[in-house]
Length: 173
Image 1 (cartoon, rainbow, N blue to C red):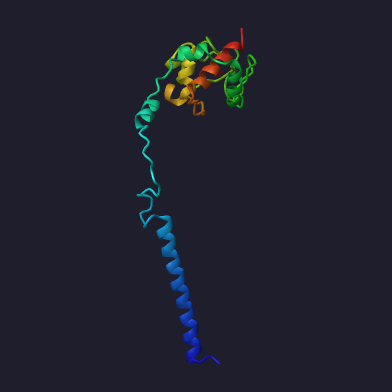
Image 2: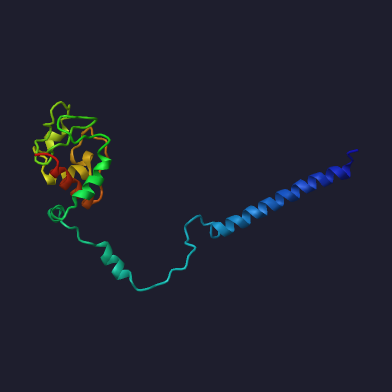
């Protein structure tokens, strides 16, 4: 039943299928990897518009000082930003959660929330939660107060920080 010619046809068909598969793989790599360079070359045509100087000037945008941002802060936007803080902080006086309560926090002595066990790293950096200290802390808590137990990564946008501080300033006495 299985003679030499049948066996040769079966092996030849497997070799042919393997050859077609390898050629297809080679063609796909050539198309998708620009000659096999794996991302070293860009497969795009760049049109020179002469706007390189404008792009460079846009990147060098002057930072607005924090006082100006705080003066023009939007309390409503700050309330929305507070949604990120709500998981660990409460606004009611004396109601601590994972973090201390934030009632009347702007201008309060650092580490003065009754009933909350602070890590001690905050009181070494500053004495009062001034808007400037809050701005630094909210930007990068672990960078501003190394050793703090606050696990929040921080708010990158200075406008969000200013809005949040303006909102927190309305909460309290």
